[in-house]
Length: 324
Image: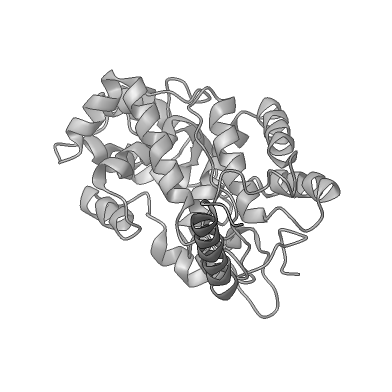
């Protein structure tokens, strides 16, 4: 005799069957998950974390570079690892586009991580996921907040030089341009300010802030003078200065305090605190580091969800620099 629980159980099996059928028919509809590698590569996350900690210990700046790598990947056709692809005879990719050339770095660290993970679980962990996890682990390594990285991205087989130029916000943008660039990706102005707080770590090249320190007026005069020695009016394009002059290798809220003192290094930095609509958000983060940490972490999760390839879309690259 069938038990009374049979009908609901049979219905549950039926619904589960429908769900699985839906996923099989529409694999791209699969969602990212924090437990994606729990059974297929259980040591993937600890392996990535260990490699990132080693890289950041060797060079603190690498933490900022790996965070930026994730940002520059996600803002160009989604978080698909496309930024890692080398140019080929048939494709000019993202590495040589003006926002990235001689600027984006950390590719060797990603290569090292990929090699280690491939030896554990061949063909399982995507380059796009490695970049996303490495960004989080870099922030943590420099004293910043952690967040739950959702996983299951797959890798693209091509990259876009043109999309890089049109999607990445330039350091010369005014506030309205910044708000628009982030709005195009689904971010609010407050989320844009939070993500800009990533400039509490890392360095910038002289060519990106030369005009500001020689020609702009909303800059602390002593601060500007101190920068000119390492960034002459001509030449020295690749000379570096910290984006956060107070604590360049600590992920904290000093960046926002610097903006209040007109010590933003890039034109786009100071635009966040220059009598406009985002001044109040800068004040909030300047006075409350916990609020900044929470908002930054939430915005990073949202950024990691930008148009990922899932299911049968894309591939799991064996070598992050080239399609299989």
